[in-house]
Image 1 (cartoon, protein in one colour):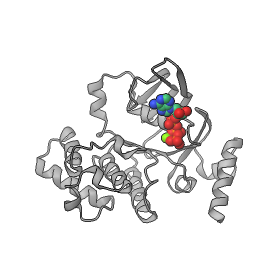
Image 2 (tube, rainbow, N blue to C red):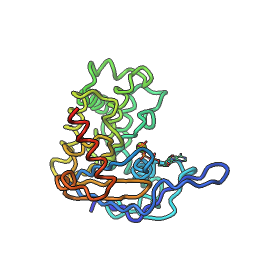
Image 3 (cartoon, rainbow, N blue to C red):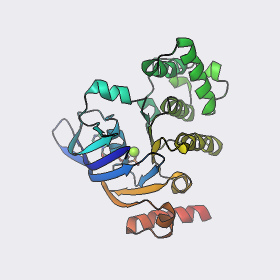
Length: 265
Ligand SMILES: Nc1ncnc2c1ncn2[C@@H]1O[C@H](COP(=O)(O)OP(=O)(O)OP(=O)(O)O)[C@@H](O)[C@H]1O
Ligand SMILES: [Mg+2]
């Protein structure tokens, strides 16, 4: 397995010392070529689990009372920071729920993309700049050479989201962790982004953890599904068709029924 999350608990401790548990006893696994659709209501702990994978939760306030996250056999929760930095952006691409989570307000977007390339690959600045522009185009940003010069705040939320998606995909990661990657995107661009993600998995080399509220996206993209509620995985299934036909947990049934009603509207 490329990714094995075992008995993971994620908590937050505030300045007063009070602890909130965001996830407990979560076990999930993901192999190359697989797309895990992770669903569940707001506050169920999806982002807390997903952002733990590359240890991207600020700690404090976050801490991990239990668990291991094995990426290619190495525990990202305990590995030294330099090793982890080598994985982030290179072998693990991350799309944050909040685009500004990964974009710096101080640098032009083209430079930020090029820097990501230069950090991990032995290429010239010119090649890195060309890759940045190529990827802005791939995620549907019009006039990439001009837009590359923009600062994040000059772009709409949807455009920022696309820049972040480009950053996460451009080095061909083994694992893409995408937290609500298409929420701010219109249908056409959403389809384009989903196609890029599918392309990443096509050779069977990469895996995707896809968090979404949209069960339509899950049915189009996922090869397996996990449902979270109150910090726990209440149902997981490697048979997506079977999950939609016959969700076992009452909460999953509710989600699937709601999605059907939306579809009929
Ligand atoms: N920095 C933080 N400090 C304290 N509590 C937090 C922090 N971040 C998240 N939480 C709490 O952890 C729980 C899980 O939050 P999380 O963001 O992981 O859920 P989610 O499933 O991603 O929700 P959404 O669908 O709204 O994105 C919630 O109760 C949330 O309030
Ligand atoms: Mg979230």
